[in-house]
Length: 108
Image (tube, rainbow, N blue to C red; front, side, top):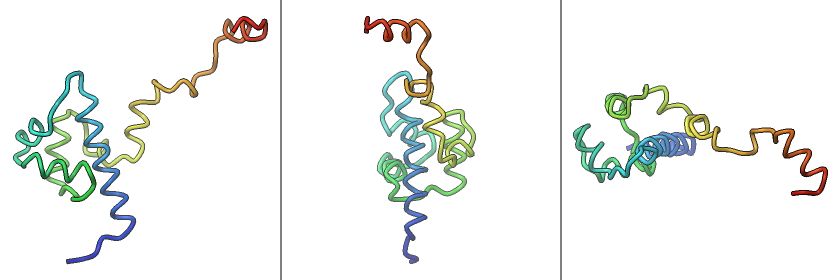
């Protein structure tokens, strides 16, 4: 058995975070049993994938991507979560001119 390097552990955790994000970003709550049943693994194995303890093989990545209707590249993308949530960040948007004027007048 080979020892996991620090880089491979970080990569496994990133993959797991993307998988968990896909599951939790659904409109309704989805327990781990739903995607696990679809791809033919136990919910405990999916939990290990999500926590970065185990690394899914390419075949499982493809099955997970098919289930969530994304590409495997989305799951491998380190910026996937940021790209999907950046519209929620207020720091990326410049304040409107109306807010700047109110702030300058001391109304805020």
